[in-house]
Image 1 (spheres, rainbow, N blue to C red):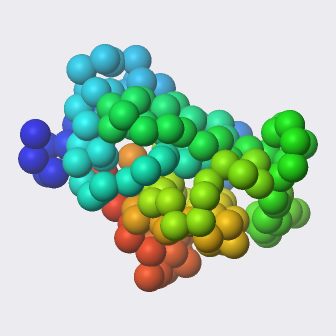
Image 2: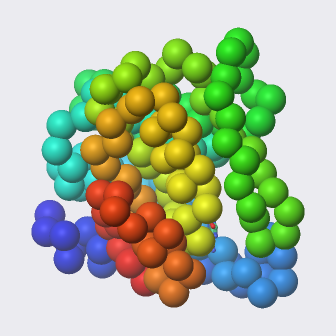
Length: 175
Ligand code: AMP
């Protein structure tokens, strides 16, 4: 499938939910895509082939896990969960970041990625980029070599791409 065909596929399988989870937010729901095995496989395979070689896939809780695990499986590599604070057992490294209202913290196990390991970082949707920027900061502190940042959908106009300037970002669809 070409990149344009994949983008059209994603466009047709994402559902807009107005005022969720709060008034004024247009939520981009990927569940129709997850629900269709053929479309989901095409998107995961497209994300995999859009990036070069990588040793591990890092996925961001929670919907990022739904992208990271099949992508890692398809590539025959491992998957590293980047989780909300307090969920991972053992020694972790953490990064806090600002949300529109308040703040959030994400964590990864301290030994999850070895220095120099090539990591593909994935999430479902790129909005302001705050979450992915924090994940990239964490992985950078651990000495990981981030070789790709991959999302199904990029919401243009929210500053995400600008915030991630310099990182090898790919989106199947930018809207
Ligand atoms: P960000 O603002 O890029 O840090 O987005 C934070 C997280 O919320 C990401 O993991 C996205 O998956 C999710 N997210 C943000 N805005 C939306 C939206 N409009 N629709 C669906 N998911 C969103």
